[in-house]
Length: 242
Ligand code: GEK
Image 1 (spheres, rainbow, N blue to C red):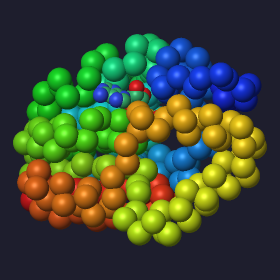
Image 2: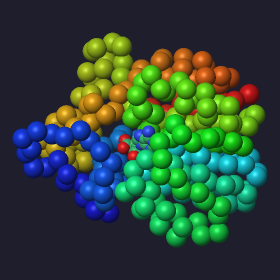
Image 3: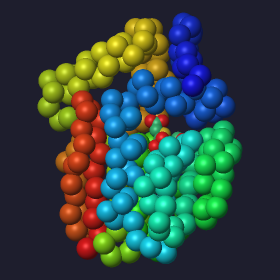
Image 4: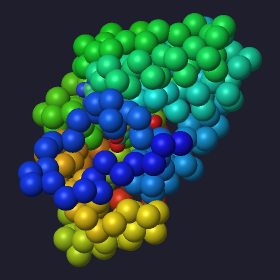
């Protein structure tokens, strides 16, 4: 795994974060050392898919990056006939994702799409994954994406939504940020790397509160939401279609 040192040298102006080749090359290491719980969430996506994936349906991985979530679901649901639709608007990610998935799931029905997840029709889905992706969409477009996912899910299907959160209570919010930065220091990032990454991502990743997510999922049509995971300000929810 190539080490992420993209923000280790002081930059005069820090550009907005983009999912380019340089990021894709170090991405597994970046996610592992930057997202508290990422390494717990990925295998659990497969476990949850064992419960909710339905035979002869589709699994959508929206914002698939290098395909870690898809691989986890596939590992746990091999006995089912599932078609995987993996979407990402970064060509650097999709290119690498395609070669990884074709190597690990050579006989599985698989479609890789390099496009905005807002342009993708969802049909005959039993599991939809939005694993740390919704936060990158303009907030005013998020409800319409969730409505599109809801209408394309079969009855009994689920959306798994993982996100970075903010909290309305500024004290709690600051604690979460401090804990998250300590997590990054514990994983070897310097203060310079932490502050430059923060400046780079701040206009790109716009987090919501847990309550906003829960309300929006219900407004999109979902029957129930369950928060099944939280580590500091990183959380994952299941939204169930009745
Ligand atoms: C994982 N799910 O390892 N349309 C398509 N893709 C997008 C869009 C968009 N509008 N916006 C962002 N992306 C993965 C991790 S990373 C999380 C997901 C992170 C893509 C973007 O190119 C990137 O690959 C991914 O969403 C977000 O389980 O970087 O924190």
